[in-house]
Image (tube, rainbow, N blue to C red; front, side, top):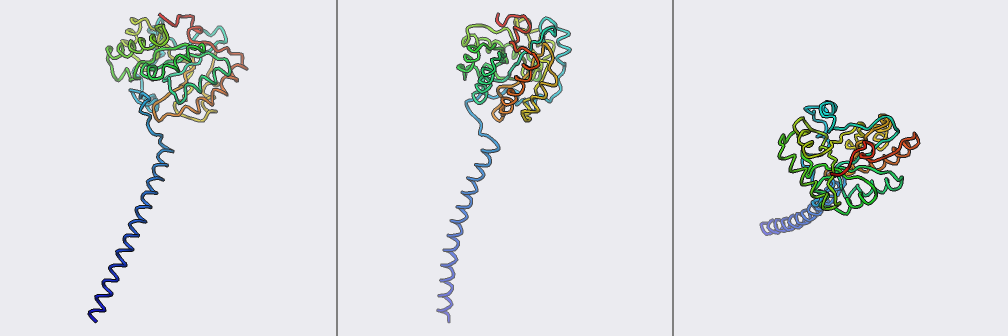
Length: 289
């Protein structure tokens, strides 16, 4: 009896051990498969950060653009009419498309392809850190008749930084970078998020810049469907409009809908009799110093 009991006990232990081993293998396989599935899901919904793409120093447009400005650009334009511009003259059916946050290798060239298809010039406000990383895209912008403006080096929130030295460093470093690439010093500046205050505008005037804001916001940074982005533009456009769009964004931004919306915006506005021009052409100001 004792021998039989011992035999049964040993047999049970062997079976349990083997089953446990099988279970462990099965569990490990399931975990591994789960990891693969989890990694696939993460990659699908949360694109991997591109280490080569310089980040926006102040954070993504969304939600940063939702923060309240200390002074509206309308008031700044009234205080500094020789420096801050919201739109062009309403006497002619001319409008200007503008794009911020490039050059972005994921989206900028697709934007350029659409503009070339419709023979439309635009003005690109580029980040210095991205210009130096992707100079070939900046050169293409210039070669295809577009104008390049200064959008700081690392895209900080200049109001939050509240430091004139930071502004000057960001602006002059970008100006030097663009001069090395293009052979001219741009005179056009647009602040990240459009955020400025009195002293910053005064410093930009000392640096011989025209501060270009906008009169029509596509809100494409919200990544709404192309029809909504197009509606934001088409419903607000008027002669002399400066239209804000984005050909780049932070690492998790997607400008695919912006690109698609251009195929609705451009034909519709051309049909209405609007002529697309660059910001300097719209305003009658020089683009370089």
